[in-house]
Image (cartoon, rainbow, N blue to C red; front, side, top):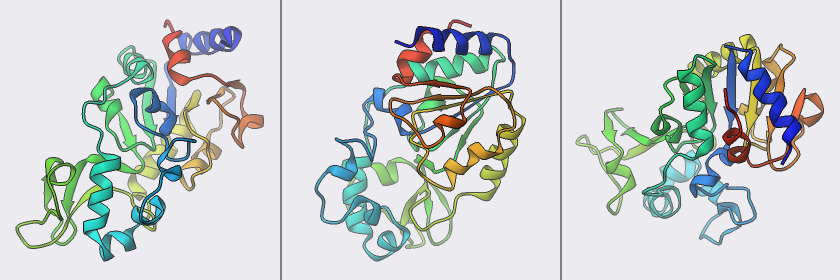
Length: 241
């Protein structure tokens, strides 16, 4: 355990009321949600097509039945609960320390833990809408059942997530940039910082307290003011402010 690194992080957070957190899949792995790119993740499991192809806009349009077979088996994880990292971030927001959570995850666990200001760069599996008329639908329509879910208008209901080949929501990206640009402390956790354009958000940070918490090295370790190579839940469980 990086005791000194965690102590430094704790001191920084204690003295600030302008912390922003930017997280990836590693934040949710301790809740039992697999990281796509981990050794045991979806990218290393056998399927009819590569997962990145199934999770693309063109594949969804071409074969929604196969998409939903994959979606319900691999993306829907009933009963998952927020972990120590999710809960601590919600506590820091409640204490007036944390301004926003910016996440690449689609699982809704930050909100389940109590976080209020959550910017979901890749959308949420807990929302759905008709791909034809845009009518919103409850998540039950896509996450359970069989076959292709259809709207009253006949259109295919789709999850409110950003599929491959689709752009990120520009309004959410701009809001994320504003929070990062104005942050005193930017904590980046549970992400390899290899997925763009989301990973490029780090470049907007203008402060001198950039913290990277990740099990493995990232391309931005040399830019950080503090690097902690530990499980993010272990690190956040030691934060006492």
